[in-house]
Length: 184
Ligand code: IMP
Ligand code: MG
Image (cartoon, rainbow, N blue to C red):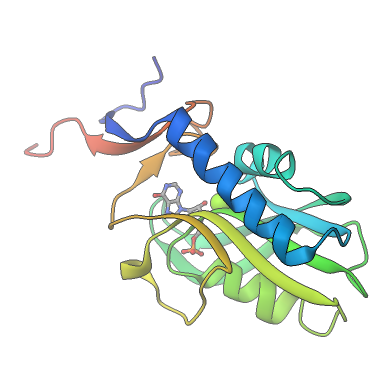
């Protein structure tokens, strides 16, 4: 089992089955809203890749894929608000319906930057956001996903693409992470 020193998987928040049900529901809503129009789905690396892989198979439209890698300065669990693009989009957004796919929206800094600064002025036909998870109590900027799977409390979660120190991404479920000896 994966073991990051000092931490352990606390418990399962959403099982693989619950996640699949939710992803199907999101896929249905997206398919209805775009009414079969071709869609450019842009995943934010790396956390979104598992969710994105499942979501695109539930979308009933022609899908073009792209990826952006963005890094926010800060420590492992807290973002600073300063976003840096590590990998740009390959597809030109002009005239496209863009759906940004992210694992989790926390402070909102990453998605705010990508939608309102990075993609602004690139003449996309539309830009929407799909996230699997949202922690509204942590929001620092005014941004909400157009499609969100689960609203969660202020917990640090891992699995289904989400990491801590680059570990736990392959877990098929979403779990919360706990300190092993919080009293120490
Ligand atoms: P934001 O810019 O603060 O909204 O941060 C979003 C990014 O922080 C996500 O793409 C994740 O990489 C990371 N993140 C935020 N909360 C968690 C969590 O609970 N588990 C794992 N990664 C998280
Ligand atoms: Mg991420």
